[in-house]
Image (cartoon, rainbow, N blue to C red; front, top):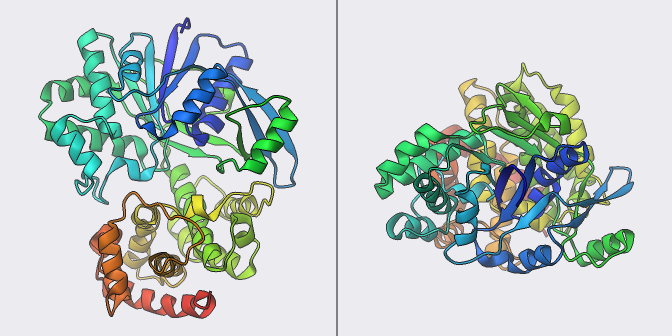
Amino acid sequence: MAVENIILHLGLGSFHRAHQAVYLQNLLDAGEKNWGLAGGNIRPDMRALEEGLIRQGGRYTLETITPAGQCAYRTISSISEVIPWDEALQGVITRGASPQCRIISFTVTEAGYYLTPKNTLDTGFPDLVQDLEHGGKLTIYGALAAILGARRAAGAGPVTLLSCDNLRSNGDRFSAGFKAFLRQTGNTELLAWVAQNTSAPNCMVDRITPRPTAETIARIRAAAGWEDECPVMAESFIQWVVEDHFVAGRPAWDRAGVQFTDSVLPFEEAKIRILNSSHSAIAWAGTLKGYKYIHEGALDPDIARIAYNYVTDDVIPVLTPSPIDLPAYRDAVLERFANPAIQDTNQRVAADGYSKIPGFLVPTFQQRLAAEKSIASIAMLPALFLLFLHRWAEGRLDYVYQDQAMDEPAARLMLADPEPLRVFGESRLLWGDLAGDARLQAALAASWQRVLAQFGGG
């Protein structure tokens, strides 16, 4: 890459290409030519996408759709280098160790950080254990240890580590996990180097980006006029709020629509608790009603009421006061979910419930209970998830459910227990310090009966 400054991004999935890559494209279109984007993956499961992007020189088409169904098409060419995956990750290590690399960003999903609710490493996962005990590179921690180890040896200087996942306090939590990883591996020299030469800003990202279907791909190709192997579609809404804490410089993203702030907390809390949580609830409930797409559930009055009541009764009170107009944000979010043109699947949004309950819901439970307030509306969401799990265990879902944080044998034992609701409410993996709380158990029991009455016959 001939540019002066490089961003290395790990995770070339649809979201990155519809979000961060678009912001850099905005900047390039405005005349900024000093920054380039290199992208690669740390796992081999996206080889076809990588190969397609390489053939296209990193270029692809983005389709955006408004809630009114208006489509727009744009060629994105900001990814100027696509790094092929190799088992040793030599390509991304070389790029990340170069002095031109100023930022290493990544999207690995919430579950990809292997963190407990107390921000400690959860060593119950074989990939993490492999990286901890055998120097593997299967996780973001193992991959970054290799990249930054090479960077330190090369004397390439400071670099910003930028998490772009839907994880509360994503920079802080990633940093805590990464430093714990280095301590556990005994890599004290790299740990000291990381403390002196990196930063990890918190940020909030938002854009609904479904997995492209065959129909979507055909439509985009027809509109674009070429056989794009890697098209992406997303809603027209886009947002990125970032704490301005970069140790090696950054693009002038504020010229491209990025909002910089001293604290991302109120923005991410509103997004996680209102958008992400409601999104998951609609996916679980929609699946239980036999729907395939998010918009079908969002347009179902019973499901929409559950999401609306959850936000109105439980979330807005604990987030008030806020710099955001929370009722207006709630209404905008529900309108976005109801966009039939997006064709976002319940399968995509329902995934990783074992990460979403502790990450998205438990903080609101804790605050409502601490204030001695009702948790009747929010308790509907985990009750929906429990019924969803029953359908999964019975083989009655219409799709494959994916959950990186779930201990599948333990989940099946719970569902087979004579009292699955009690065991569910006692799970420390899901509830942390709230596990077994009598108030929680009572609310879950009441919501369970309501969920069975509304969704149990499917």
